[in-house]
Image 1: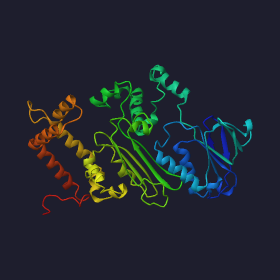
Image 2 (image 1 turned 90 degrees about the vertical axis):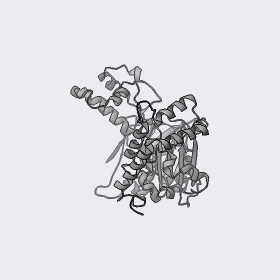
Image 3 (image 1 turned 135 degrees about the vertical axis):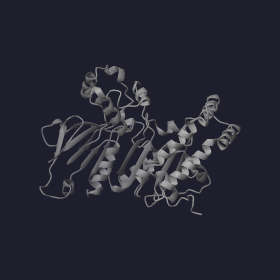
Image 4 (image 1 turned 30 degrees about the vertical axis):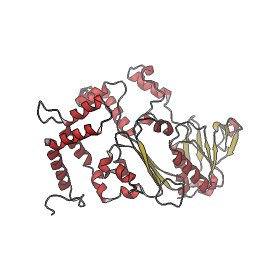
Length: 412
């Protein structure tokens, strides 16, 4: 038997033919009911479609829509709706789960009933996959905080959930916090001084991007890489003065188009803040995630090329040979080395380039052309320029076996 738990604690069971190497739902004709409007709900439908369950067997019931949606992108929402229709999936929006089996919970699940503002909905089903919104179990939360001898009200924040941050980074933070409880001798030894100062903050500061990657109905590969923090509706976010701009290629719902949808959000500092992909192409996920946080100048003057209409397809653009250096696993270390050179003072009485930039920004957030020219001249005349050039050549030379497309000293 396959058993899956509902969020209410009840369970349903699906009979599986003994020794059969096929999906049990492929040999029945009853409905497969999926409840929820989360990413997992859409992914589950595609998973069962991929193993041979006909789309006409599915009934997708979505609770009242809450903003922002799991996609937080009108184009993706419309595209997924169109793909569900193309697959033959029956969709019902705005319904809340009320009960199953008309209240007789002792029998195997065969029927689910939903309520709405207009009329109820009742669906006969062979299988029921429930994907309601994820919430923290109160008892587990209380026990954990009682163990840590903290007041739970001090840490209560309905909107600031772990779902707004990178789960791996949250897990690492939790592990480091709990490890000292079990081994007090490690207290103060696991973290450096800078991290220890952050640990003293009431709310930890997370910097790694939120990343989700899955396959949606219709066989579309979906990737979303975004800045950690509160999930604000896209239209409300875009009207903010400091939003920056969006760059899109392939913005069409034509299912026959092979290019696919690719959206970049470049913030006011010209750094990549959001990456959204929706395509039937195979995604270079590990490479595309590396784009997060990079300044557009690292990406072959991305903004200038896009404005000059030299980029019509971001998928092919980021597969060009020049990108390999950006995707290299040592590129982040190289960037850190460059930053150290710009932060370092040439001498005790001469400010660093970073200090000059910081002083100008404190006086006026928007740098004028004259101020930019002064900074450029300071950089050209500084010792940091030659050191940075040497580090760049060293990076290309050391990794020349992986980056043969870049010139290096001695080639000409």
